[in-house]
Image (cartoon, rainbow, N blue to C red; front, side):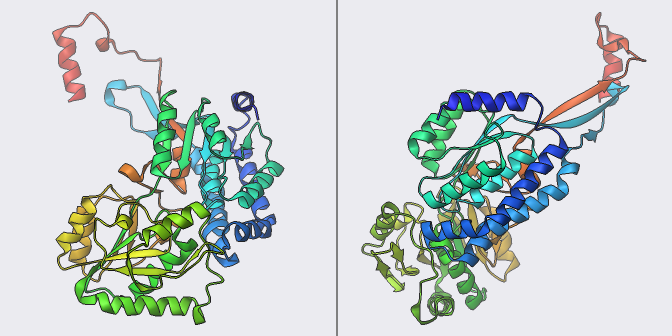
Length: 454
């Protein structure tokens, strides 16, 4: 594919003004909404082929979330597009001031493999709502889903408006050589640095949705049965291949044994008779072997099994983990939970603050003092009190990281804002032209300005 021509064609289409009207944007969103519903079974089948992901999980974490985001944008877009009046300083009288949303232009969306539908289409919704053209690059690690997305978008959009580029690293690198007006990337920290470096060549603004080791704290006041069930949910969802999955557990020593039993009980509720046929597998052999390697020499108190024939790793809880162990040095991205005991809350805070800022933090406690201390002491992208994962499943709050876990955010109105440049406009009247700002300057004029601007 000639990417230079593709970008030139999109820029020409954008500069024609076709994408700017409310009607055009709403029509595009409704086309995507209709196509997603029409192709639901094909997408579910593709996810089963790539991941062994069950239909309910595919709908709950992928298709349903995209449909909800579409509904939210369609309902609120007319209001978002209006110019926003703001106050005008007295010194600028007579005038009126406002902020006017403007699309960036031609955008690039590079999406990851772990949630290949949601993390591809949700940013696209923001780009469409804001009036941009978009080049979408799905991951090569999920070929069936990538093909299904390409077919879906190719059926409803011309490539001069929304184009899909399939392929791997070579295509990614070639796209990053092009000049875009905005780049939205979701993936690893290492690739995020490459994207940012490429964007710097043209001073292109970026959103980076990355990851990291997201901690979960369980203190002695927590409801242990509920905590274990919700943490287990966060770990088995997508086989732990979630950017905000609880990566490691800091648990008060007094409730550790109780938690181990409750975690085991939760897994038995989720998978009766040890039947894991409805649990997703690891995406490919490379990542499967990486996670298996992290288990070497570790003590599994729950789970620990695996099946090489289908890249399956059993939900696993590890005990007697040390901070210097290899499993604590990188994001696990799998259904394995290292457990570190603590006695004082300050120890948890010290551990968390000694590491790069995580994308998520989860705290299980019934103590307001503990909540206030943890949330007031630790920097992280977002999180939950007494739950995991669910803070990203809403269009009413932005989602994004901080530091090494990312920059920028999206979901709902924030998606529109991310793909929008707000121009500040002052409309000045001609019927009065106060002379005090013009040369020649004088002490009298200076005193007048001091009175107006103090």
